[in-house]
Length: 450
Image (tube, one colour):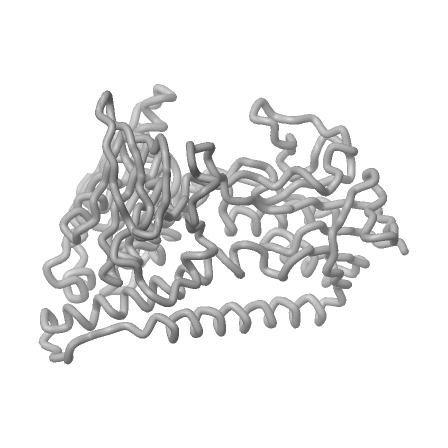
């Protein structure tokens, strides 16, 4: 059977591309081996944020007295929290299925194997296509640590289904996933230790605000071991023993659970990608142009498989660009303003350049940094809580980067992302009217201080 477009992978990139292409009149086949929605919807972005919202609600109840509200002893029903998380996921997966069906996409749940750029095999059936889009997502990295094969450790998948909070936990890796789960279990009352090899958590994000977030969670009881590596693991009926090294010192820590969250890598094996003979980057990922087309004409690569930005919202935009090119529409991918968010409490979000990246490139910049308390709405809703807004401007005041620590950073960072993508100067951005009172006004307050 022949299709105009075959999409391999039903995550954010895959289902977005399939829907857009089908709505434009193309005959589309989407092949997904597991569940529609990919890791993001089924065991990543959505379920973690559902759990974190329950944790934030618990925190709000505990500290309601600061706002003049009296609440009894707040507690959490973890089985009910997990059940709600599963309900949210099911609802959204059904929504994606309905959207694809309404668009006329043929969906096949099976293992796909690329024969060549125009043929994909599923079981014994071979499907032909004019264009091929591969977006196979990513998987958890499990490091080679002595004894790890004998440990009953968690990844994000097991942590999402935890129905009883452990008393103690080690989180290996202080990146976004590690910090979000550290925040979640800290709210549940677990004594959490985060072990990070680098000199700061959240590598790639603004290091100054990362340090402030770490200090905030240190006050909440989370212990951070930086510049530290796990060298060995063992387990007995009493729990897990983590052996770690910091400098020349070797220490041991006994805990109930260990969460492995050192990062993710693209899934590039097992589906015949090598049969395409694609040109690869220095890091070994398929090379793509500004339209997400690989070195093989008619073959497109989107999402985590590119190895560039392992974020769902990046994947969605890449898919839009790829399909627009297939349809003959003018479009190109821009990575100038890709937001990154850590959904801790408080939230931490950034977009564009960081001070570290600008310094490394030798680009001159000016830093504007003000407390979030400059926003009246922030003060009204965050009693006794601090926060920071940082803007990075070029010499001509073009906005290069923005970084926010404080709720709701995830919602307001888009304002800065639009300014960066459109290359607005500070004065041009100031001309945009922002409703009052909103936390988003913090950007105007920062710009006004120039």
